[in-house]
Length: 75
Image: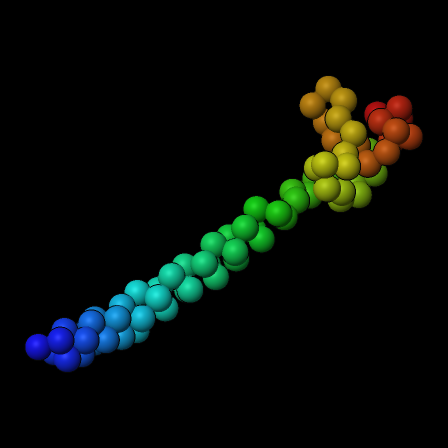
């Protein structure tokens, strides 16, 4: 009787490993891929010279993006 329960438990565990563990690994990989997408920066164009820079490094004056203080004083 105990042998039947042990075999049943091993079969249930094997089914769990085959069907559910692999899905968890795949979902972890897709989550890490999505995380990389969020790390990308938006590129904006300088209103004065047309150079593209990241929005984090841009200077903003009156709602316009500039690549440097020099371009910002010209515009």
